[in-house]
Length: 221
Figure: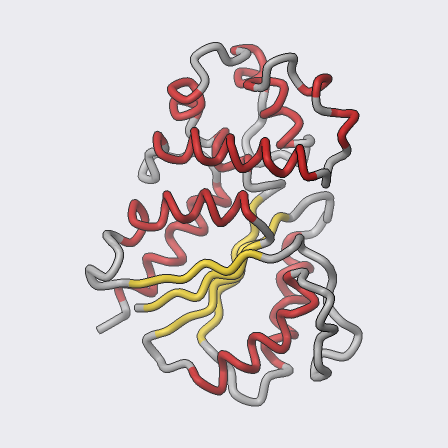
């Protein structure tokens, strides 16, 4: 099975580049994958069958055209995997249904898997607190103890409070989407993901991602 994985940005690319062989096995033995990062999540275009704007590199804006292209060339041993953050959306099912409509707009439909990190990808790290402890031995124990798994609670901010020198306060003035914050998130991914045990992760949204990929590997030939 070959996975074409669409993600929001560099943090997800860094994380999955480390975790994929833990989830589906060593690259090319026999499964393969390619991870495509974008410039944030963006929003779906009003016209799902129109051409995307060339200067918009966000994931959702380009999703309809990418699915059409994949549908025209992909075989039954290939699948598009869409990984998004739920962020502050209140209804995960409604969000998923909106995304399935994009597939419905394609004349030729590729295999398609939608997975949503709740609230954000950083929830996956909280799902393996031992990995956080190994990557950041001086972590704030109270923050980890108080965290409610996969809660919509400002997840990356909680992680910053737990592991970043000076806590969240030292980063807040940069703004959530600033280059500095994105770079810090990438660094956290690079340090924590190598220590993660994908079999024992306590994040429901991570387990859903892991098991979704594995189901397709079991059906491949």
